Length: 79
Image 1 (cartoon, rainbow, N blue to C red):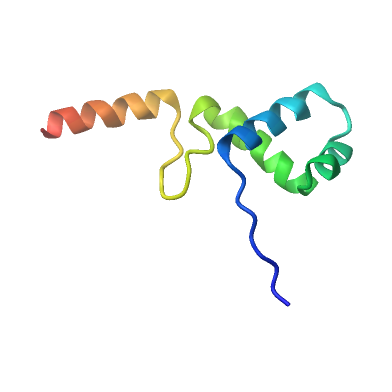
Image 2: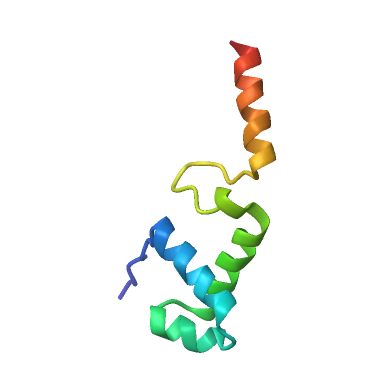
């Protein structure tokens, strides 16, 4: 039997990451949230790397604020 893939929204992931920084036992927090500990660590790493640009949604690029600014300026130059 196939498992269905659960898609978590951005707010859930950001709250989970915040809680993971506040708590010491990540495995226990992951069980409480219904996710795996490796998934929670992955979200933390992504949040540390991209900050507010993390968890952009399906089909959108993850970019740091500087990369977003560069992309915006390149689009303006192209126009």
